[in-house]
Image (tube, rainbow, N blue to C red; front, side, top):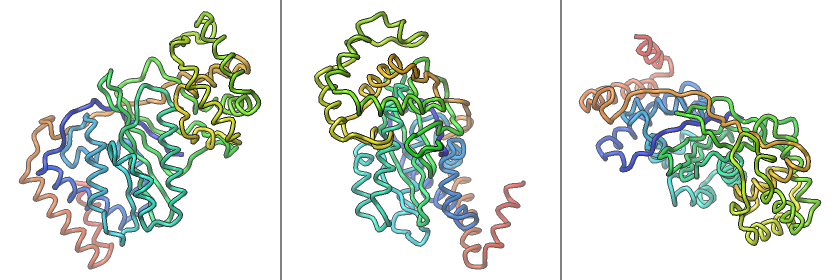
Length: 360
């Protein structure tokens, strides 16, 4: 799985209309030329790269370091490809309530096998919200699908205390494990301003044993026995169980609520980790509780490695390194559109002009 993360400061407000309209036009032309030259799969692959995605925000004039890059770029691409089925690209979701409406959007579309993409949509959100406990709550979710069943998910989480947003990218596969039951080590390129000091990662490359034991334990034990074990752990000295990381106390869990969720999980009797985390109501605290118990009983620790790996910096609309030059923006956009339109009419050979221009 290609899975990447970008971390950005939260900015309030929204893109001004004059900029967003230009963004739509420019991003459409850029995405169109990638499709014409390399196909929709290549476009989705590039969107799953956080740096390439960030470049789209910068080249279209948005703040390089703003959380709004995610919402404006995905919204601009979604709007501009709406009702353009000839390109074989379908885009669902968005910010806030629009993100929650993603399954309905998928069902109401003409895409084949919509149930598959609804599952992918839910699963990617669950993984980023619960399996990577880095302090970010998902509030933006967009899934891109092409006619050949390739897909890309771009979603963003918010940490209101740090006033940062973290962006997560997925591409095509849901596991790199030998066993399809496990979601293991999905990260290939992660961009972040900073790593978190407190992170619990249930999908690290050493987490197969942890995931397997959570499934075995939840299927073997009664919910009341699980609650009993958790109370023992949270009433003990925390450093015995969570060395060099944040400690957990009984105040972190609502046992009555947790008991109900455990009963629900027991009824489902999940056979693999994917089905397990897709159970409605299962959230970060339930997974944490089972992870702690599994660690104590079986000895497989929860990874504390934050998947963030590198940072980046560009320029943007907030005046850094310079304000948006509207006249130059429109001139460039018109030239770019003319070249691509001519290429569609006269053949793909005309696109060599773009390669020449990029070398100047």
